[in-house]
Every structure is written in structure tokens, then in C-alpha cells.
Image (cartoon, rainbow, N blue to C red; front, top):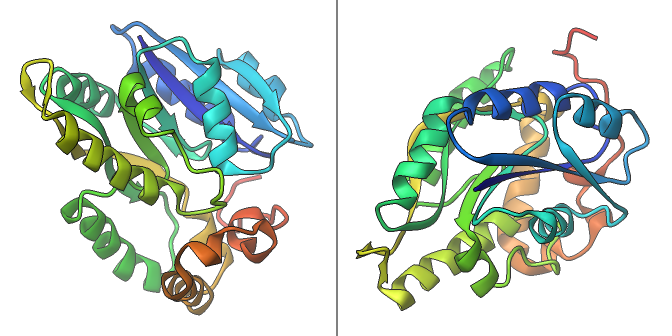
Length: 247
């Protein structure tokens, strides 16, 4: 069974589209959708249930912790973590299933951003997405792993309030190398060529200077820079109206 795990905090504007994209894309496979409602103050829980998800409620205000809580509640043998502002396609789901049947124990997918996007983002984001693909790192909006691999590597590191998907990518690569073979094939970690579409709301709300400044700060600080929530307002700051939304 495929367990789609969706961490969500105050995502009433996007959660229905995300869940509906999963349900429509996973037809033909045994699956479940688990939305982890992390301390939402809006209608995220109600809307997710109405769209067909099973909702698990937590109060951790941490992306890694919410994802791990979803994994603990999930019943499947494959975990697919999808951000609450991300839509997937049948090609992505079929890609996961095919990859898992041929030795892949974890991975991600190529990422497109919804529109509109500012010019600086249209110029830089495709390059970043390509870099993630070439380095075989899963972007945070879409990560998958077998239950065995996820549990063997300890899941998402709850010492981190951001960048936990990069950490898990490295752990899964090392795990694949250590076990050597998986279901008769060379065990490996991969990034699918199939694409998910995630929200560009942060790119619309914040300037390129702000976003790249934060990225370079975190590269410089490493793990020290992502161990405290209050220093990561891009991820945990108050919800701001998306200038590209229709609401």
C-alpha cells in the first residue's frame, strides 16, 4: 500500500487541491491519504477530511515531527510525503511504483512551480530544480521511501526545523549502499523525471534577496542554523496572504 503523508499547518487554501490530486493520481493502486494537521487554526482538518483524507492531529509545529507522526500512523509499506501546497500526477505515482519494483528504496521528483512567479524566480528556480536532480537530492515538497528504509534510517531528523529532506536523502543513499540489493536489483536512491507542481507563494511574498540571503546563511551555518524554529521565519512565520491567490 502507498501511504501519502501530507503535513499541514493552516493550509485551508490549498489542502483540497493537494488531496484531490493524490486521490485522482493514485487510482489503480492501493493507497491511503494521511493529512497531519499540525496545530492549524483554520479549516485545514475539516477540508482535508471532506476531500477524502484521514486526519491525524498533532501540536508540534515542526515539519519533520509532523511527517514522522504521519509515518507512525500510516499503514502502507511505501511512504510518500507530499507538501500541503503541492499537486502530483499519475505519472509521478506510477514512477514511484515502477522505481520501487526496480531497486529504488527512496527518492524525490522534479519540481515545477505554479504561476505567477517573479522574473528572478523564473530565471533561478529551474536551475535549482535541475541541480537537485543532478545531485540526487529530494526536494522537500515530495519525498518517498519504503517503510523499511525510512525506519532503518530513523525517519526525519527532529533536531532540524528545516532541511530535513536533505538530511534524509543522504541517509537513504547510505542505506541503499549498505544493503546492496533490494528485491533482486541494485538498491539505490533516485529523483524521478516526472514532475510535481508546488506553490511559488514564498517566491511571490518574499524578495529574491531575502530568500537567497536565508539560503546562504543556512549553508554557512549548517545544522546550527536549522535547530531553532524562531530563526526560520520563511518556514514558520505567520501566514501571509499570497499575492498570487484568487481568494
